[in-house]
Length: 130
Image 1 (tube, helix red, strand yellow):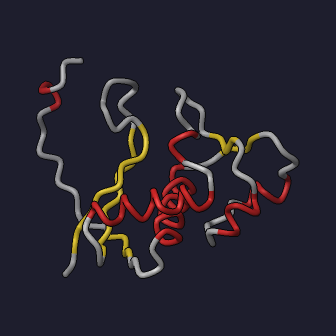
Image 2 (image 1 turned 120 degrees about the vertical axis):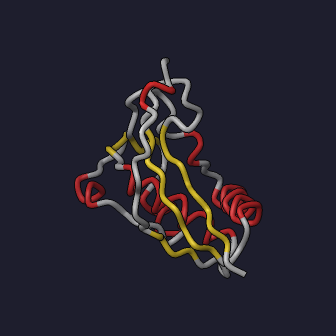
């Protein structure tokens, strides 16, 4: 069965600066299994992406070592070429790639395919007065 799942990076709650990136994926597992696979990888690796990029405008890797990313077969940004410790910048695409790599590490049978559909702006700007 196919499942369509939206992953949201950024201020998903809408209580901050309200900037997010949303990507939709076709998946062979439902959202609950995808979340469980991510959590399983966190337990295996000992690193949780929920602990990075948490503060306003803090788009950095903090404490995730290159060998950890290699362990999960994750996307390693070019910035690692000059990485000598501390933290490095991370893009939203990097973050998505890492999260997906974690999920696939937690369940090797997961298949995700990004779907880029058309967007229709239906108006309603004034609906959000905050």
